[in-house]
Length: 111
Image (cartoon, rainbow, N blue to C red):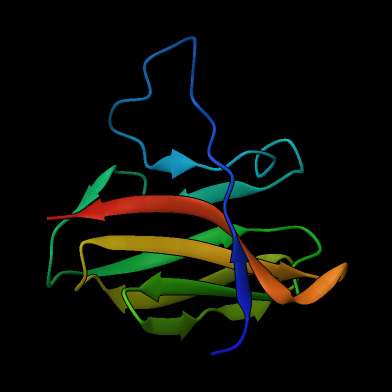
């Protein structure tokens, strides 16, 4: 796939972030909301209901290794059932400013 991915990671300075996936910079402040799954680590081979609110996103995908799973859209809400098979799973989105670049929103570890 020729789309580009942009990654920004935030580091929480206050509060306990254990038990939550990595949330990327700007996602929450732009009105985004992760609905599920909430855990940091996903179990390899298990299927998860991914549900996320991403204002102004054109497309949202769960990237599992080299596999891109496109989420179904309903307004600003995106969802899909996806099995976690690689060591890392990422939710990424494309926005109107650059339709071919996907920005990481949320990152999970898979074990």
